[in-house]
Length: 424
Ligand code: EPU
Image (cartoon, rainbow, N blue to C red; front, side, top):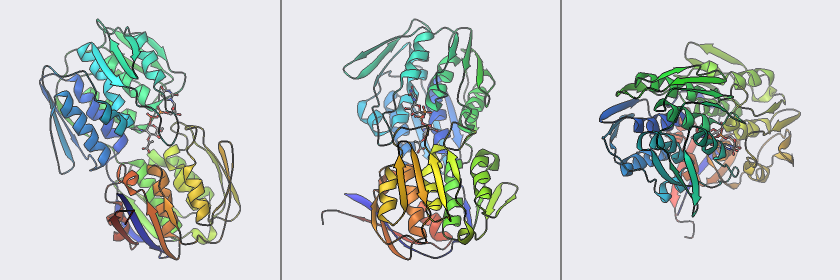
């Protein structure tokens, strides 16, 4: 069984799309609820997505009581919970590893199967484990699972070799219940980290420095429940803006924080796209016919996000001139290239750099989404293609975009899902 989406492109999109809450902010905040005992954390603006349901399932298996209605998740955590993370849930979603820090901090032990690689790279968690070990955890790998234990985590200074988003989140959460002060250096500065720190502060944590390269945390054992709000999804917002650009349409994304995707907006201006702002909305005007090639390198925030690289590559495939796109975060996040080439894109890969020569149009094709953002890129390409494009592997896309089909249809896209058995 596989889900596919049919797109009849060539129509300029017109209208406003409201942005969903951020998946990558909601997941760590949900994991952070495990630091609580006999208390409830309520999150608002949580997107309805497969990955969120996986985290709900994981927290339930560990012992939390959860309700999820109308984009609101309430997580009540009892005094005693399990510390063993089941392999099927970790294998389903790498972000399941975010429960490791909170479990170890509150229970003094945790067992978690190693999440393993995925289509965009090997994605080790060595930085998470190294940091937890420095805080006093004993970590062993047995039969492909991490067995971590501690008599009590201790505050210390940890320098991350790379500003990993997940390692920053795991160590930040663990440090909340550690004894004394923890200083995390060279940490990730993503808005999702700021949302996590704000949420932890609502729970009673003492944190300084979120959004900078250094986090200072004073261990604070007395936490309480509370209400937190998840920030808008900057990656979904970027994807819908690019849908406007690639369709040569006029699209506004509302309910966004434009500063969170300044790097894309700067690149769009460089590419001659008409961009305008009105409070929490960003609009693009018809620009495809004058699109100019650009060069970019993906970097940790506030650099250009790797999660928008595939979508921007689809757009740049139709620009005038040659764009150079360098991926520096993941080792193999170019699986969309072969599919874009099937559609007529002219892309040459040289190691982790893609040389994208603009072409006039894409051709109708059947293509395969190999991961979430690759799928988004192929949908964008389909919106620009006269005739029918079929994107297979929509299950990946549903992990990160709530109602993408409905949202794009609402601004004029001719798009329909077709769930059927591939073998007949
Ligand atoms: N890395 C290591 N060792 C570690 C941790 C990371 O070598 O211990 C490497 C990774 O292999 C990768 C790079 O560092 O090459 C970046 O990984 P990072 O830890 O920053 O990413 P992540 O926490 O696994 C989050 C998002 C990703 C997003 C990246 C980068 C969540 C749930 N996931 O992943 O989102 O691409 O940060 O911004 O927050 C997506 O939404 O499509 C997605 C993949």
